[in-house]
Image (cartoon, rainbow, N blue to C red):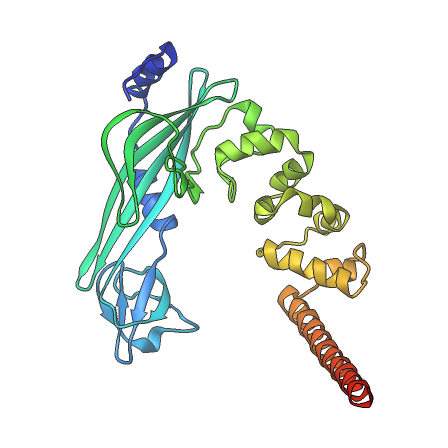
Length: 319
C-alpha cells in the first residue's frame, strides 16, 4: 500500500536510514538460530553444514563433532542427503521516537558434498510509536496451502486476516544480542532474551500484569506461554520456585504436575513437592498412579453396572 498519512510518509522516509545487517549478525544467525544436524546410516554420518561424511564411531548419545568443520551436530538416523531449514529472527532498533522490530527470514539449503547455502533477507518491520500503535512496513506475504513467500517492494502493509489469522504476524525465535530497546520497555524486563511472547504481545500484557513481569525478570520464559488464569491459580507455588531458583524448561509438564499434586491432595506450598529433584520422574510416578486409580475405578463401575443389569433381569423374569 502506498503511504497515505503523515505517519506512513515519515516511516518510509526514516526506513532508508536504518543500517544494513552486519556480517557479525549474519554469522550469529547462521550459528545460533539454525539446528546443526547430521544424518547417520550404518556406514557413515553426513554433516549437513559442510556436506562431508565421517565415521559413525564418532557419534555418542546422538551427538557428534564434525572432524571437517568442527561443528557440533545433533545426529538423526536417516538416508537423506538433502535438507532445508526456514527460521525467523529479529533485531530491535530505536530511531527517534520509534521502537522498531526488524524481522528476518533465514533459509538454509543442505546437500551432500556441498557446503550449506544461506538465503537471508529482511521481510518485515514493526514501527511502534510512543502510544504503542504498530505500523507494518515490509514485503507482501503470499501464503496459502501450497506456498509461503515474501515478495514485492517494501511498502506499508495493513493487517490481513485469513485462515491462519493475520498473515503479517511474524514470530521470531531469537533476538540478536545487540538489539536496542527503549527504556520504558527495558524497565519491565523486555530485552533480547524475550521468548515465547512476541514483542507486541509483551508490551500489551506485561505492563498490566505484575506476575508476568516478575516471571520475565526472573527469566522464567516458558511460563509466559501459559494462560494467565493458570498462573494465578498456582501463583503461591510459583513463588516458592522463584525463591528457591528452581529452573523449569517444560512449563506445560510442570503445570500438569501441579494438577496431579492437587488431585492427590498434596501440599502445594511445600518445597518438597513443588521443587522436585527430578520433575520428569515424579510426574511419571503420579501420572501412572492416577491412571491405575482410574483403571480400577472403571473396573468397579463396570462390575456395579453388571450387577444392576443382572438384578433388573431377575426382576423382569419374576414379573
